[in-house]
Amino acid sequence: MDFKNLTVVNHPLIKHKLTIMRNKNTGPKEFRELLNEITLLLTYEATRNLPTIDVDVDTPIQTTTGQMVEDKKITIVPILRAGLGMMDGILSLVPNASIGFLGIYRDPETLKPVEYYLKFPPFTENHYVFIVDPMLATGFSIKYAIKKVKEFGVKNIIVMSLLAAPEGVKNVEEEHPDVKIFTAAMDEKLNDHAYIIPGLGDAGDRLFRTK
Ligand code: URA
Image 1 (cartoon, helix red, strand yellow):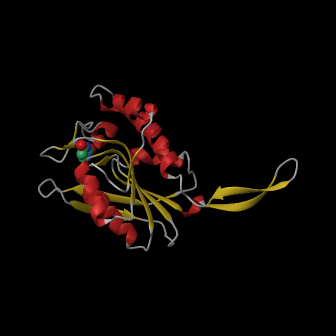
Image 2 (cartoon, rainbow, N blue to C red):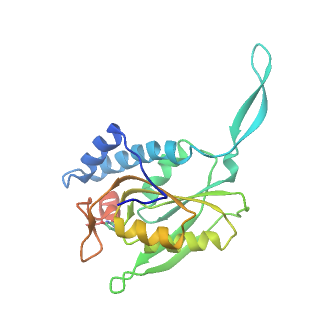
């Protein structure tokens, strides 16, 4: 399946780490560390087109012009709770980013998102917002998060996930064709409970050992 705005970051290290994460015997410590490492590698790709500004810099020899990212105009929005597992990976490359929290749970009957917490920093129109959730499954939570961020006038929105299902990417792309999606792998499909298959199970439970 071809998706215009989707980048599957194809790298042997990502594949290796993801295979360990899929293994049901991998415990929470290693799972968290690997999610952190893969997020860092995804961030490298997802930030490739960030604008830079010219700045003067004094080297020990002379003054020259360097380029810097305006990292104070970058916000990470982890979708609670599994999105928290991707926050540090981005912060290690963009340490001055601000964080906006969005708590959403999936209604078990309708599978639709229900908001229970929102705390965003002040956005400017030219902010770059990275919405992160390890599992892009139905796409409903991501679509909800994009809608919320857009309500603040933000135009540059990037989604990062660890795994994606075709149904979810299609759902997001149809409503938000302006949003770029970066993921480590595109899996086969969703099962009847909207879990990604083959997937890795419930990312939140595996991160926080809640089952
Ligand atoms: N959320 C998860 O944690 N896992 C899935 O497979 C789908 C949604």
